[in-house]
Length: 115
Length: 118
Image 1 (tube, chains in turn brown, cyan):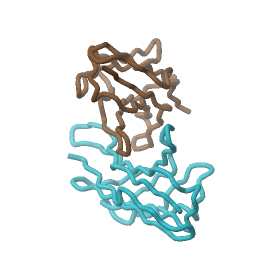
Image 2 (spheres, one colour):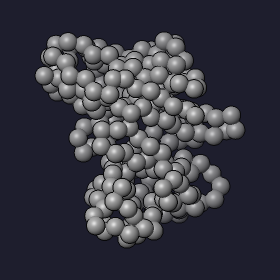
Image 3 (cartoon, chains in turn cyan, purple):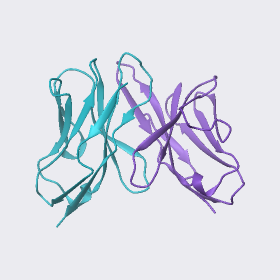
Image 4 (cartoon, one colour):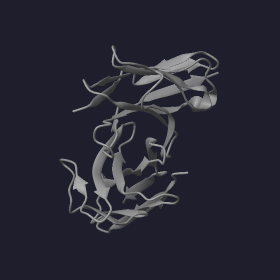
């Protein structure tokens, strides 16, 4: 079964600093990978996804992630964070060979941006 | 596009009563929908997968008789928490699988329902 590990439960950073949120997946087969953001008491908003093609994926709000098959990683990065980026971030995986099956989520990383 | 509307956003109910949560796909047909439960500071736990016109598939440990899921049409899925108790208090989120015209692939989420059982 596929699984996702988010290596950091909490990441505190100062405003305008770069940030990396780490995500590793465990699968020996092809995968689809996603990053979502969740603000308090809200649903999930898609930041970006990797289905195929270029391993560097650019998303909304200045975020990007790189798919690294050899390291089974899909780390999320932003060169300069804002206070408004404070939220919960979830990495998720699905199996492209089982279309329509549910996303499997990591435990989440709380990003706290302070001034 | 691919918007899922979830209602209500918040509900408080008395212990022993039932609560229904609705998720509607507004601009697409949702053949497959998922229901998640999220505890405070925790990840999303998949409760069940529902396919239009068939019985939902529940994850291990989820009580089918307590969490009734109905997916009677391509635009509506409902979760009914029956005989609710305080331990059912949680944040419930629905999600729909979206297969786009050009082979795009993704999932869209409702805005969630905060259920408080008193």
